[in-house]
Image (cartoon, rainbow, N blue to C red; front, side, top):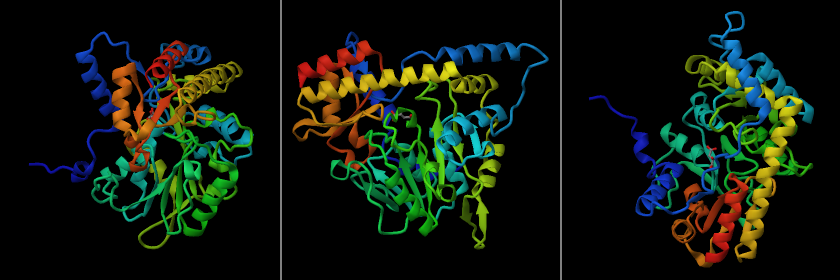
Length: 409
Ligand code: MLT
């Protein structure tokens, strides 16, 4: 019989969001008329920007004409999209990123997991606690960890706790860590990083030869002008960081699928024979072998994000979700709950009342208010006693959910 990858057996229960969906299904099977409002998974609800739809419609027409039809595209993405990304997202902010360093993909989640293909298994890996679970689970699957303990912490990982006490930004570790996952604006806490803070990480990584895996999927929600959107706004980051970006949350592409990863050509890793090897070449090789690129139609939709109309429409979308977040913050605070985040991020991180556990609060919210959120403990042991509310929903649903929570808690 064929053997399996036994590392999968180390994984704790189900992946967080399918587990939430399972619990909600059980509840709705028993209560089919319950008017459930989902503020759990960070999935967008508002329609795609018109500029993106128009561009995709035109792209479909292109595919219907022999003269403009496209077969396989470049595995790295079309040049016109990579150029638009480099100019708008990086060069306009003074970040030195060239179009050839951008790899267009179908998701930041996929890329943040797949990136492990190009790294060795002997790296010391650092994650914050709480953390976006994909970073941890993909390391477990790759065999980079030991077993989980009773709190769900895996042997071999360096956990860097984040809490209200450190403003939800991890302290720079005293020990050496080879791969560091950072996510700003943060999922799940909604915390943000200043330039000065990221500079500390870049300096640390340069001293230790570490690589920062920087997830900036929520950068579009930054409204504070002083905050960096990209790690490449920090001097030296080209030599120590890979950045993940997405069109999911700024342009509503969660169901359309388009993202990109930046691997600077100056970024090096160490080979077993001691030589320095460019990670750009390895990631390119990986993508060319395992990925055939994002569809032409979707890439045209993503390109339209950078048009004048696309910029205005995506700004309006982000503003809409940020207003939702402000409502969540205001109403929960008025209900006597302590809240964090939700200012430069679409997530509000809530302290559960009276020491109630995260999953108990999840159940109470579901049963009493028919509202679904995400238990903080699902993001790591240090998330216990917290709860995440997503601002991704219609205004009517957010208002109604807050009314129900205010009445029941
Ligand atoms: C979340 O709710 O944390 C996100 O939707 C997850 C994701 O974007 O993959």
